[in-house]
Image 1 (cartoon, rainbow, N blue to C red):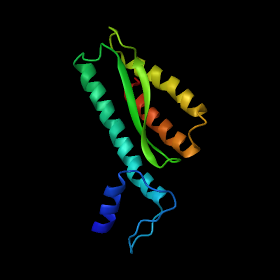
Image 2 (cartoon, rainbow, N blue to C red):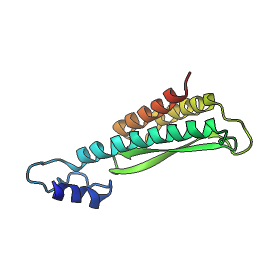
Image 3 (cartoon, helix red, strand yellow):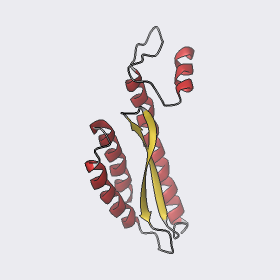
Image 4 (cartoon, rainbow, N blue to C red):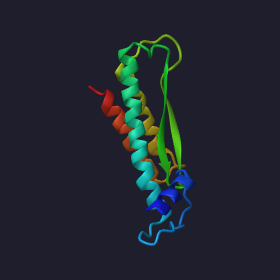
Length: 138
């Protein structure tokens, strides 16, 4: 197991497509390993983003704008990337959860049409956006 863990640490979420990890008891393609590690990591980070936004909103600390960077695993390049969206432009606008919902819905429409993303990457990113939307929807 230690050799397997070492190979994951050395690759730092960038894995080479079609290259199996060298582990005698486990023959797994890099893409599958990337999805197994990066998918849950991205979902966890989205959860952290939601908790942070809610905490800061409760402290009235989001009245100067809000931009988010959602992590996701790109199946084409086999690496973690971020997708940015602006919820509230910089300035003195009071935070309202409905702003997150509106921004996420607009972003979902853009992601659904983005031909640079393959279908599985698009599906995962849309699921993250849906999680974000659900957290701020009443």
